[in-house]
Image 1 (tube, one colour):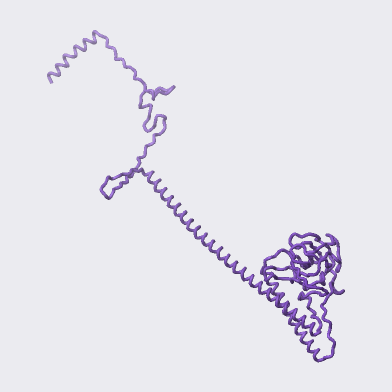
Image 2 (tube, rainbow, N blue to C red):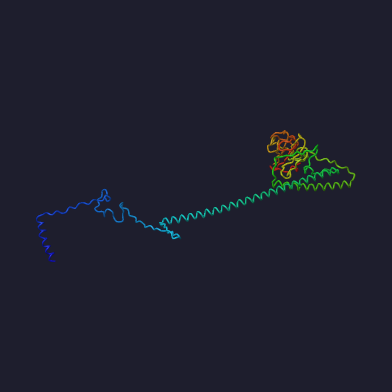
Length: 386
């Protein structure tokens, strides 16, 4: 304490002495260099603390705090005590990887399911197509067999018709009234003719076979009635014993009676023999939409009803030289395979008028006329109009 007091006492005279003798200047404070980043044009910042406030960046925007990322480490430890391998993934990468795996799994499951479905669907479709083809082939075979049977029945009916005609001629009985309906011809023919033809061969259909069977059924009924009538007539002859027999000539008028309508096909278009009937023929392999009447080359062909010629000339469908006549009310007649056509399109013709001469043009095996009757475009059996 005494020493300190002595020091103070000794220093005070020295300070007073300096004050008396020397003028003391205050220290000069040099200005500090202003950081370049704090200089702002037109503004003076006194201190770095005033230049950048707390919580803001250099541009005056609020500083964002960086979020701390989470990392996951996957360790792969081999069974043979080998080196352990580590895979370090961030949470974001791990989430992205899991999402990618899930999306890939969904796509794989969808693609696999669609592939399995498509495979089964294609197999089922192919199986159904094979079954349908088999059924179709079976039906076609059955239809062909049915058409052959119908054709065979028609042949037997024709044989019965011929047998009945022979019996009538031998016994002197009158000709059957429905001989024309069976297509046995109109008589007045010398020699045998077998010309056949029509359009190019057409495969039989269900409608064709059904129609043929209906015609066979009708023919059987007519044959039964005709044979019963012949039986009764023979009995009457046996009872009479002295009655003269009727001539066995076959019916022969080309056109119908005067009472028939002039616009309805009636009678025969030409004299001759029916060489091919309407319906199935050639062992059921072809449907014939008309009848073929065969005779010598150049035999006249006449119109069976009044009408207007709508076709006259060559036909490329197998009919050769052909004539179509429109009779009105949806009725049309056709005459094919002519040697020569003597009418022209638009010409009005009358029943019995010569329209062509018999030939063997087109799909034909010999001189004949192919005769069709069409109702509203559909062919019908011409026998009903003869």
